[in-house]
Length: 112
Image 1 (cartoon, rainbow, N blue to C red):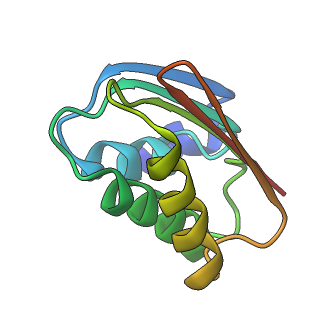
Image 2 (tube, rainbow, N blue to C red):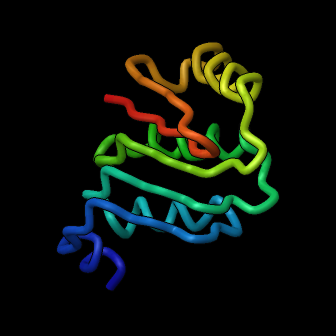
C-alpha cells in the first residue's frame, strides 16, 4: 500500500507546523518522492546541526528523491549559527552546490 501511494503521489511542496522527530522527514521523503520543497515551522528541541545533518544524509542515501529546498525556523537564529551550519555542510561534504540564507528566524537552504 505504502509503495503504491508513493508511486502515484504528486505532492511537491510540504509544510510541517511541528516536527517531533527526524523520522517524520524520512517517512515524508519516502511517501512523497516528488517533493522538492520542505518547510518546517518548529523543530522543537532538536539540535539544529543534527537535524540538518540527518535530513541531508537521508537526501544523499536516496538518489531518486527530488528534495532540493528546505526551510526551517530557528527562533534564536544568529550569524554564528549560520556560520556553524555552513562549516558543517562544507566540512562533512553534505552538499556541494548549495545556497544558504537567513531571513529573520528562517533558514533557507537550496541545492542541486
